[in-house]
Image (cartoon, rainbow, N blue to C red; front, side):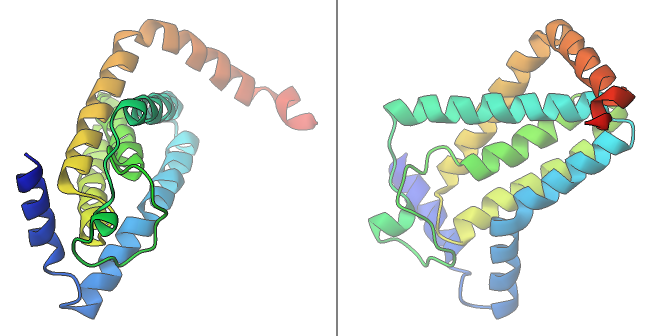
Length: 187
């Protein structure tokens, strides 16, 4: 499996440094996609998709916690540590499996996909999340299996959150009502 992981990585990164435009685009996706997703979450919060936005937040938190637990048991070098490919963005030397960036992106996308009311934006976010994950590989900071691991973690996170949705609906109702109260904004 590791051989396949490395070969896929080398194939994807073989396009790096062949086009300045493509490199700049992939660097932008790799570095700034999470900020775009945060802006979209703020937008969805203020456009009457508060429930969906809260579920996205819960899914991200759980997904990133799962990543931390996995990191306690599985350590995988980043490609640049192993001396593979080209590195287009700087990153500290730490565990690469699964990708926190990609878990963040896919968790948000799946949370919006699961609700009929936000499915269109969920599809768009899912496509952007996959592009974001591939860009992390392209830029040399993740292996392809790191991205696949993030997809699995995000599916697990949204599944766990959704199966306990009755409890989360009560929390959401409390949070949304608290946010709507004028007293909340007076101090």
